Length: 227
Length: 402
Image (cartoon, rainbow over all chains, first blue to last red; front, side, top):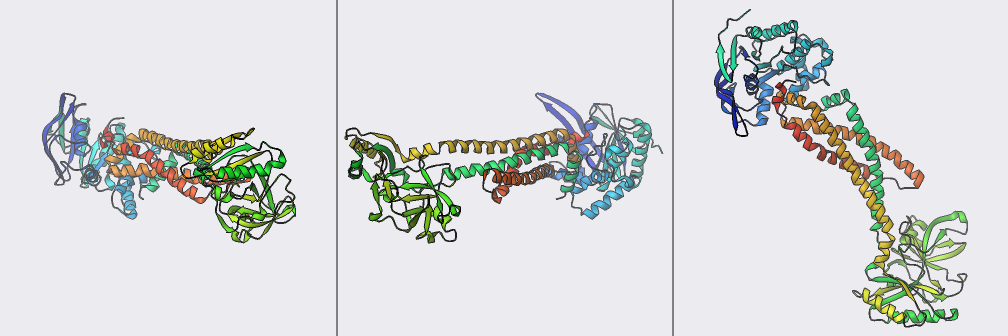
């Protein structure tokens, strides 16, 4: 599903070249739940941006569902992000002026879905996260945990190949965080692949695989999966 | 338009900024429509044809330094001498120069009843060569017979009752068919005159008078000690003719020649105030369009700054650059369109008031149409750079910490 070969990222400022990510290989199969851990400044966000097609990589090849993303135009990358990747952000990134229905519907508007299909998908997604009854509410009327559930519904509505979660519990208290992790596990068990960036090892251990990034180097950790 | 509903909802949820911009555009559009109409009317008047062969004409004022009983003889001699100059085509004596700002007017009535008022008209008197000298066109009827034309020092009680009117005046006299005005009688100061001919155009002496297309020409020239001459120079000899005429007349003892000006100068002087008004009105029109553009630009920039992260999120979730540009341009067009609609309503109300107060003409609907389209295009020009900037927001901004 996701295949990276020799992918690396470097920044050049003036005459100084900084290697943010050393060349690495990574494969994630359909239905996997992979956690990416590492300390601050290790390159987690850079890895996440590359995996989410939000940022260019300097070297290597990245295949998403067997499609090589190297050198794709911005338009094609936008379409790939929209169709293949469901984003879950640390700060939820909901649009405060839109109600829950419109927030979840927003990425679907960039695809050729009919109004009827969009409505069905939005209601199904909200149903999955237990917020179908609050579709007319606005984000600011919800708790942080509920807002993150809306963001998950938004990520699920387009039936993506995988969810890309960036510290999904980073802005939540432990009780809400547990609820979100439980929801992500449920979603994964229903067949959706998840790639989650986190700095919390307890949460990382709930994933099937852990990839560690340290000083720009990726390495796989062998950790026993918890129930 | 998939974006239409979300945009309306977004605008409604944070309506203060857009509402203020809508009011600003509405006020600017209200003023813009009325001012641009005034500017256009002024421009129309400034470029209006006088009906005269302006390029070859000049005028001057001169005296008859003889006893009054000799006025007619000397005037005839002056006219003959001027016409004989090599540089001169023809000459006429008249009571006032078109567009000079000085002259007389009459109220024309359909009968001797003062309530039968038709319209006012500027009044001219011309000698025999008046039509050919000024280069006027008689489009219906005839010029005066020799027997109708007269130089006199007496009053106008026994002047001929034949007159010519301009087509604009004829249209007032016979609104259904101006050409039927020939042969009709009109009344001035209770006396009847018969229209014997219609002149295509002969502008009155007051440049800013709204009725200056209406003129009437009498055949009887009543002389005082001073006269106004209009001379038609031979082609390309205007300056030479002015020198020749002055030199000729100044040979007479006691003679003066003054206010010697080309007709071009008379027109420019006459329209100077109107030209200034036009420049101011045109300036206000441009300033209002700029103000609207600045308002739209400012609102778009403010919105961009406020929504930078939201735009990044949209990009991350699959919006292409085109989607972002479309969203921002459509949002601006909705705000501008609302402003234009509100402004059109206000402009109509303002126009009705202006018609009542200043008898201004009704603003034609084209002004609303073209004005609205113009403001929308100006707004598009103002918003496109910001929309382009927004479209180039990196989607990676969505993953950055707040």
